[in-house]
Length: 328
Ligand code: UDP
Image (cartoon, rainbow, N blue to C red):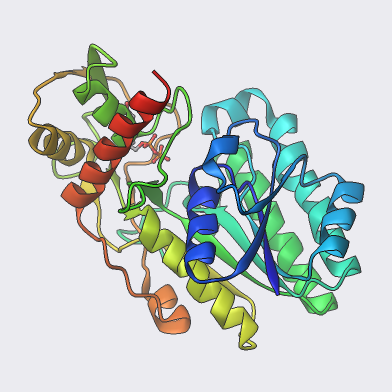
């Protein structure tokens, strides 16, 4: 039994590859290296450089390996970019996923784990969002992912395929053993940006919005550590293999940190003070996005082990230092 990981050279997919290898699973990666890095895939993992939507390539891969599960991470993930280039997002995230799903059905791959996103909820007006909350994505990015959830739902009803779609909240941190981390160039995510500023790569950082209806006025997010997120995927794989029914599941801790909390943690952990500028809100940013995460614990037996903001920040900082040595 082999697991095919699309996007396995990227941040989240790359951590999945490590976890599968650590568990002794056979792994194959397909990645077009548009944002991932070849060096991120261990040399003993079979690697195909290409597009997961290319049906002849996928047919070749599925035929060459005994693929029993596909963990599908490859996607475009930048919300403002999706607003500027909706069709690019629908082509890559939705239309190519349809191609992949078609190949999975045709070649009897029975299990699928899909990277979905909290962006499918839009701007919820509840304190913590459960999977039963109405979906109302605000961006082409969120819609492109929700459409794949719908395709999976319908496909699972019609064919011998079961899936777990995991809706990620804010993923951060790095492999505690220092093997992998967030390496994307020009990343805009808060924790990455803050540790880069602490290391002097930027002269200052901005806080986008100080007038949200939150305790300190800045945006609140549920930051989930990458190894914990991947543990949910490994549990999902085991769940599907033991016959579990298809499931859509939040991945978060169920509590949040504000932008100022995060910046405070980065300053403390790095021992560096840096300039912080208060700026207007970014378009489309919700005030608060916190998961209700009971379903993952109950159905997947998921047990988070790294629910600690300072630990997450320390890992991000350690990885950023390693990355700098690797890519001066
Ligand atoms: N944010 C910020 N400054 C930055 C980057 C992000 O104030 O340089 C804020 C952003 O407005 C949001 C939170 O940090 O409230 C998390 O943003 P991020 O881009 O990391 O993830 P998102 O929640 O948008 O997916």
